[in-house]
Amino acid sequence: MSIDVNGNEMPYVKGETVSELLGRMNYVFPMLVVAIDGRIVTEAEFDTAKFRDGAKIEVIHLTSGG
Image (cartoon, rainbow, N blue to C red; front, top):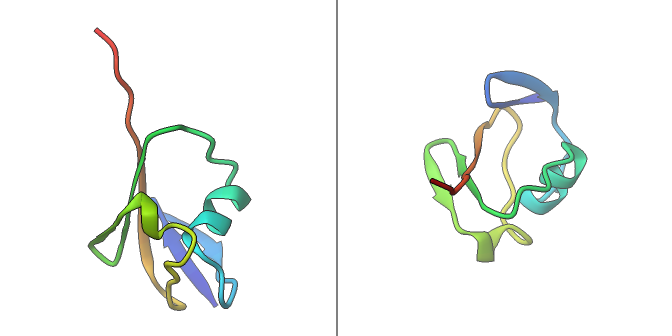
């Protein structure tokens, strides 16, 4: 059982939320965009959004500056 996160295979944890996954992966960037199987997940949904075994998850951190 696994998920694909940014092209890397990761163990699937049943019932894990996006917030928990981000914590497990040590993502601490203040601005993140997350998509599960091509569907954008809003930051407001991070604590409740879950994913299935085999899901393809994209996590992109946004940076600003000039």
